[in-house]
Length: 157
Image (cartoon, rainbow, N blue to C red):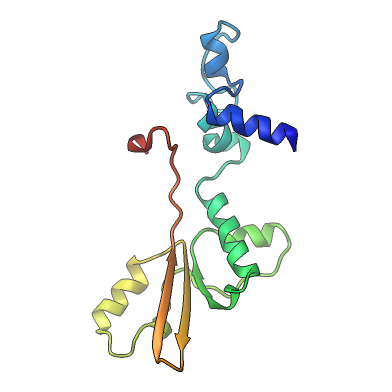
């Protein structure tokens, strides 16, 4: 636990011992990542290096979808496009019964067909929760999107 805290603080303050930092202090011959050759740095090491198996933002989004599924709103989860079933298959877990896009059956019947078609083909949320309140006859949609950037330079993302 102490090591994780130390690494988190090093990442937050730009002090992870990456080639970028070590090169600045003349402790490494170059500032490139030794695994993939791209610019090294804290953000790259934690989330950008494909050789380390990092796949942002889907790793974080998958964890969020898993938490939603395990929680009290799990029965409302109807769509997810974060590679969740692929990850579950690799872990030997059962697949979730979710669509990749917005399923037409949860859209209001009075909605024009062209709008429904557009939503089914162009709207792919990270996750979509749907609940129909029978008492009030209301549909409730909750869209979950995960955006990932460094909080120190969001304009670059």
